Length: 325
Ligand SMILES: [Zn+2]
Image 1 (cartoon, helix red, strand yellow):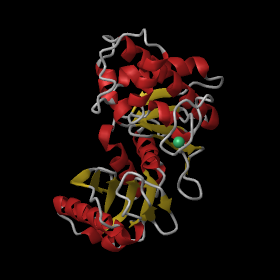
Image 2 (cartoon, helix red, strand yellow):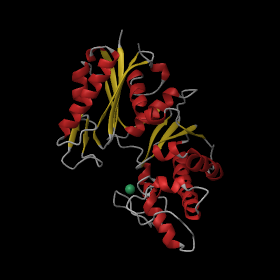
Image 3 (cartoon, rainbow, N blue to C red):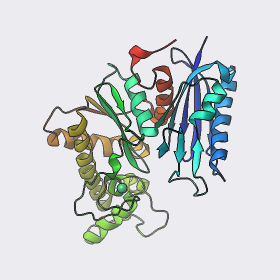
Image 4 (cartoon, helix red, strand yellow):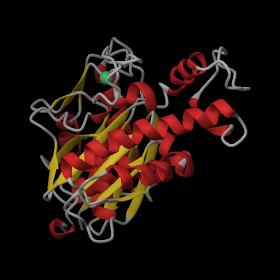
């Protein structure tokens, strides 16, 4: 019997799952992502987590035929490593992944993707009709997309395709993105951006009443969504977020003609009615081509690790016709 593994390397947690050839999970593990001091320490944390998932499954790692990894980026794909990740300490410059995992499982069959590409692989694999054209969009601390178009998972030559959060949605460029440029989608609508955007809207119209703790250091996106329907400013912010989100999603739909757009990430998962339902309403008015199904992932927080496993099961594609075993 052969086994398959999926690994999710995030800025906060490392997760691993081990499954049988039909995708049935038989072992899992989860640890905090090591904060360094070096990238090798992160690699070792990943290997430890994968070994623990194998232990949980009661198998030797060498019996794993293939592994998929969904990871924070950016990547050096040729080297199978993460390079200078933005959300980990600066001392971490290089996290080798593909080589060390291949060595652990004694197989060269290791697929490395960024987390949103792993997301679209998992969403495609688990979707009803296993569509050839779909997009996965995460709205969390940042915004990004994984795209499958004409049955091809789009990664780009360097693995960095789908950075749609850095598309300009506001030509006035009123807010500056974490990347340093103005007007980007994630500078308005990501979980990290929503507090600043809320303060900007409050300054624009001081007559809007609010009980949001705008100046508090603990003010977060969650505070805005928690006051929906009860606070004039919160409702205004949520409405404006829908406006920018719908522009971003419409651009993606016009670019790739997906039949399904699936959302994940904490902001979308925790606020389906306030975020995703409103995107659906607006996008249906804004798209001049076919309007896709717009939904929230059924996989919840597991979407990346399940996508990594689906990649291992289907040679990096999420295409169920390519299931092995
Ligand atoms: Zn940007």
